[in-house]
Length: 433
Ligand SMILES: [Zn+2]
Ligand SMILES: [Zn+2]
Image (cartoon, rainbow, N blue to C red; front, side, top):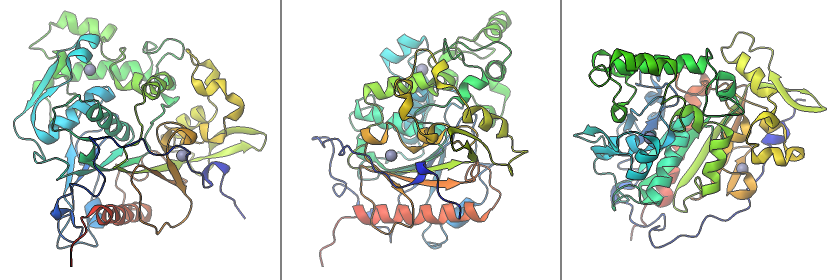
């Protein structure tokens, strides 16, 4: 009989949730009476991954998300953020897309990264009432998940206005998120020894050129090609053709520390963790959905190789690269290499893009609070804990965003609906009588 790999077996993180301070109300406090799951479900905000824009790929998922509440469906909100921007820039764009106003990337950040402090003006936010009394659920695919973690971190550190509180995020649901980086970025072009530099003529370099051309012609292009480069002045109205050519030769954006590729390097992930970014908020509910499409090559090696029935998948090639990646080539050496003997196969098992260990949650299990779920879980969820769900034979887009109507996709949305209702039931104010 086939057994679950060791990295799936139940494990739990050792640290208690960070201590609640005066600005962190208990999960039962401040929720609006309308949060009763039988009445008005809190909306679900969807944040997409690298190069993701628009909802056209997502198909008819709402049919299954709302199957058990046909008369009172949960609203879903797709938010458009920079498809190649850094986690910081995306998090700022996410926040202002919801509340409205002019995107403020922060004085220190914009000075450090050489772009304007203020970006796009959003006259009408998609959820202007967003507050602790009217919190939101978030679902992030790939770097969308890491984007929500970054936004929580910025809220916690007072980046936004005084009304912004960590409890405005009711739950964070991540799918295939590279919380701790992914070696695939090096395969695409990021230099292992000199990130954020990008190898010329690599896939990453080509994507960078495409982004600059799309930004140059942005006023004429549809929303799906919106690169959110407002703060960088890259359109034909702002720069000359000569400047465009110079950017195509060597991009100040793509080869900077303020873009998606650098943010998914192992180095950037470690820098975030060193700052404490990604610590659980005590009042927020977390879950991650982890997949892999690889098998252990031999019992004597932790390396993985794609399963034989994925021969023509687009991610088979990258799954092979991630499955045999030599972590010791990365400079500066990531912390995980120091403890190489402790690296289990979860560093090589992957969904074609992200290794399993990175999809679990920020930090190692011993450094955060987590529960890796291996069966049906009927207990009410607790806030401040990462619930990790693992599914084999899953590639990076098996669940979302590419809707193909599989049984697995239908079940995912049904189970997400149940989970969100459980969270709302756990946080609904106790009603007298
Ligand atoms: Zn920036
Ligand atoms: Zn864990």
